[in-house]
Image 1 (tube, rainbow, N blue to C red):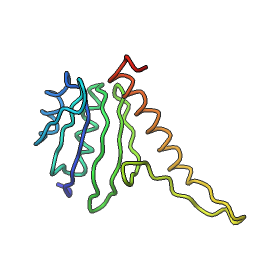
Image 2 (cartoon, rainbow, N blue to C red; image 1 turned 60 degrees about the horizontal axis):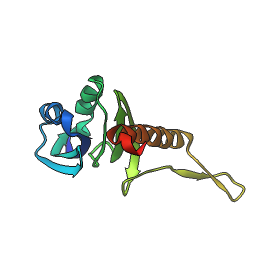
Image 3 (cartoon, rainbow, N blue to C red; image 1 turned 45 degrees about the vertical axis):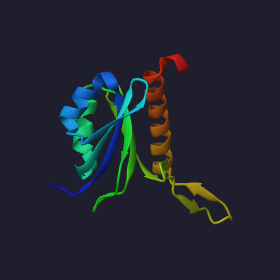
Image 4 (tube, rainbow, N blue to C red; image 1 turned 90 degrees about the horizontal axis):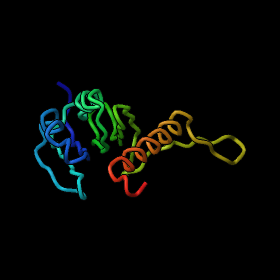
Length: 134
């Protein structure tokens, strides 16, 4: 068993029972019409194994988990089973910058790719959650 942290997962209300069974969430709040937020106060290893299990079921969801002993906090988004993670700070993806030597800086390529993947996936999830907006 790894360390424990807070996990918040947003999913469609119609899928809540599946998420509750896998996550064993302690709290549920209605976030918006048809969307609920499930909270786990003591997610082992950030809940990542459970999130991968839910992704394997082809579900769509998004959320975040807090810092653990061996990992930082992350945002995640999953659309129809494709799950991506990105390091975060203050609910925004982190993109570390490095000086180029000419007075400028550029993004760490892996951070930039992770942030782009997250925003792409998050957009798909949001559109699926509210098709009238798309």
